[in-house]
Image 1 (cartoon, helix red, strand yellow):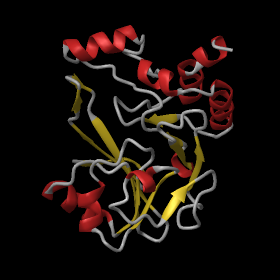
Image 2: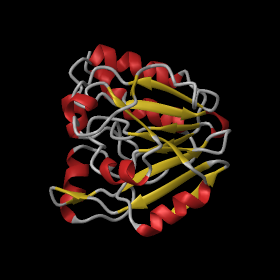
Image 3: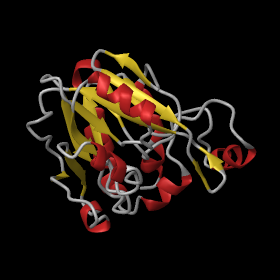
Image 4: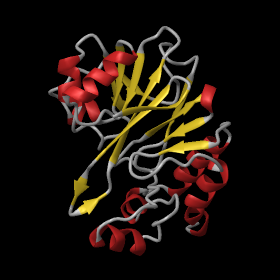
Length: 228
């Protein structure tokens, strides 16, 4: 369920279907210097995943990285009541049933700042996604800003990805392009991300991109320059 991707960096993949599209989902776990866990974009919590998570250390931080990836927070909050819950601007208003301990902005909290950097992706208020950099492993962690689905999929998923020209490579989807309303702000966000030192990219939907992250990210968002 949870696999070690690099030192103190773990991922778990699971099935996820929306509108007939089989896009899968990924959550990520970082072991912080104090041994506590930073859980990014928690997925459905079952007994196996809980045992695997507990084996790594105590859950200190639960992070919903955008206004869409919050569907499974309830079970995690119930299972780990001592963990601090963080979400992007707007999510606490959307999920008034949950108590958030902080709002994710451009600066990392002291609890994870030593190993994780972060910044908000501006220009897409519908998602208000916050991206992260796991500095020790040079890993960029995104959620819905781009997909990286390279394997076999059902015909609905394949059609959607082909229409968006994003099957087989890291690319923003048609839906994501539609929700980016302020392209100048989005371009500036991409340029800030490109100033980070990373090689690997993690996305919520699709495979891990192990190498060539800088070039792939620039190519994924090249349409923003064409849309000036």
